[in-house]
Length: 205
Image (cartoon, rainbow, N blue to C red; front, side, top):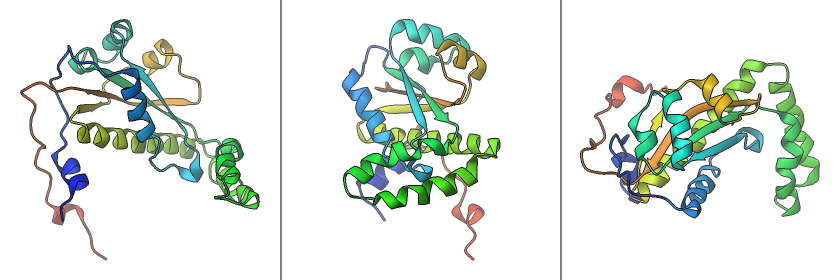
């Protein structure tokens, strides 16, 4: 079982060392986010936001509240990957392009909105769980896109979420799920680390 997509996935590893002189253009950053936003989301909520920390000034703001991890200052960009609490009221707006393009009939919109409301509205933990799931799917797509472009990536959970929330103006319904550094690598990074055997993690039933 092998093709270029699978090889990209199997060869990915978290980068530790980046070329601090290498940059990504704003268009390249936009392309990475565009790819990330093709990931699946519940009821097509698309409940995410990406803050691209790429200027020296912004990196200097992020670094001390993210354990001063070298990737933040050395990588071309570090994304603050935010999930937004699941909110069924946005579904008509998010589905409008599907209706306008003829993919979805208008009568189907409430068939999505009503069960989403029942699933999330009275359940704050489910709202937050969905925010984390959504942001993680988007970040994963960006990680593999970066690898396919010859770039390194480093997902990080080492940061002060309260400080990030404050310093970068997150709204009350946004959860900073992870930091994701992306940039050109320099020598010294490891290959992908061995994983547990499939037999230990798979049950066939």
